[in-house]
Image 1 (tube, rainbow, N blue to C red):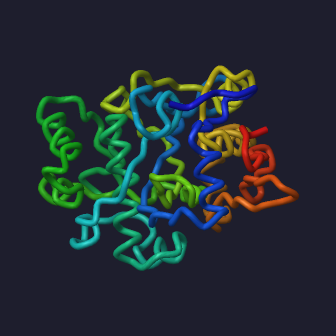
Image 2 (cartoon, rainbow, N blue to C red):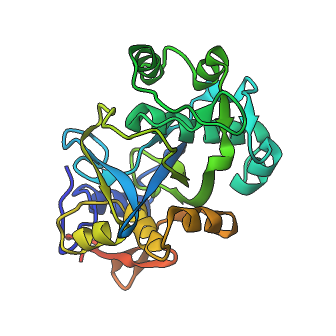
Length: 293
């Protein structure tokens, strides 16, 4: 369970102890798992809004925090070539900093998780179309099978004859969970626009509510301590406030730096300083025997 501070930064109570253990050599970092998350946007009269979900407070990781649809990469999605539209796998491999099979699996994870958790599918019967409605019983059965990992996303696309629309995604940033966390993820954040004819819904068993909210409004809620978020979530929201439309954000994505953001913990004058490079607002000072400041 996380505890909110003056703002809404997610900061688990066990972190100081784990940070001290890492700094003292008593904690071996676990290997992060690859993951993808999608900032799904739609235009409103107040600018673009982003689809967010609130993780159930019972969740072991980031319970009660607002986040985007996302989850881990399924290794099965790199062993079969799916029908693909948009930039090539080689282009995506270069953009994401991985090999081609890894790139397909990461992009598949982004599209699959958006479908699993929001009911929105960035795929269509042809390279220039998108499925218009995914609300029928047969679609729901397929979605449930994906959630249960009874079928891979590659198998789902192949059976339905669908083309994955990688051109509807823009890679935005990459964050790696700090080394002192027990659950670690190497996460690529994407932006995408809600396809015409589709609508979001709370399809996730991990969320107790979903909202469409402007990045500025969500950031204000965080600053007031009303909305709990992990550092990459509020960081990306602040970045999105610069764009007047969803299209502008997507157009900006290819030029963005994907150098991974990884928190560091270092000992400075008797205290441990926890910081995220390039994001000074998240810096915490952890006394060697007390609570963070």
